[in-house]
Image (cartoon, rainbow, N blue to C red; front, top):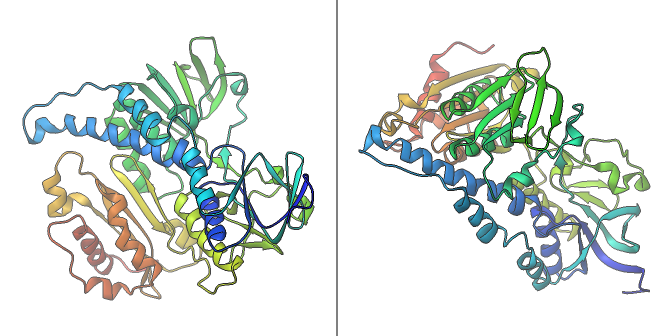
Length: 464
């Protein structure tokens, strides 16, 4: 009920309308609650406008160009002339409606939710301030504010017109050259895409390999793929200083050597949750925290829930949506399973794709598990052999030898993210490895490599 223009009571306030926040606000509104969704930018968040969707449009286009380049080895002759305008036009026209969120805003309104544009901040238990207005939530507040690009404190960088993923997604023209700071998923995906459209790309990664959060074999495969596309990869390298002279960037590396020069500089050095900006100190939480700890029902504290990147479970849309469903049930007083992250999937959409679920071998050992592993190249399968050029990849399985179940797996190859599904089920459901071996795997598919990897687990060395 409205009490005055500046102070209003509602049932729930959702701060941040990315994929999880938008879903949650809509679901609660459809259930009959009085819901206010607060969004400072675009309804839908990072994923549809600057992340998952436009980047995959880029990747799809780059993969088509790569496929044309593989024709001579398999089917004759083909030529392809890269046209960045096709890519940027599809992103602005089809994916983002030129970065207009009216369709998403209307979708929320149709479900009964109310959109308030502005930056929301907690100002007490169950209270949110938005540009001079205060909303008091009878049931509670949900924080779903996502993450921001992490900009490393490299001297000179903050005084240059560097790009983040947002600038790359909105690029109307292809730069002639680009330096990428960061060799994680975003960095390697965009490096490969831009290189395939004839941009001269150099990746600078401080760790000793790309994709440092994944299996070493995944990083090696990604580096091999990027080098094949003409990308210069510098691992174990750190930027010492960055400058811009009006026409291009210069990056000096620690340890000396020739300076790197390029027309554009893309910063892809990870992301962070700006917890302090949310006023969490007003409800007794630490504003210096890197993320918000939640229980299995997504509760942070009394009357406060959190979903998505801000929970520290990974900056993935599917995690946010998963958590949003759980939070919606809890707010509505419905029963259901609590959050379970054992089988958290992630995919790096390079060519080849690199999908992974659960623990890496290193993580499993750090948890004190007795581990048995197997790595089998995709080329050992009939489908991998048939595929030929572009068919590089592997299956890696990580088994808890004491329980006889998989706790992690990596599926890399032309359909790495799709083959991952069955491995996700195995990890999530604790399907015994012995039972997985007693399945039939369709011939000739890439899934046959999973069968081979299961056999390799049994034939390989014992747990250690």
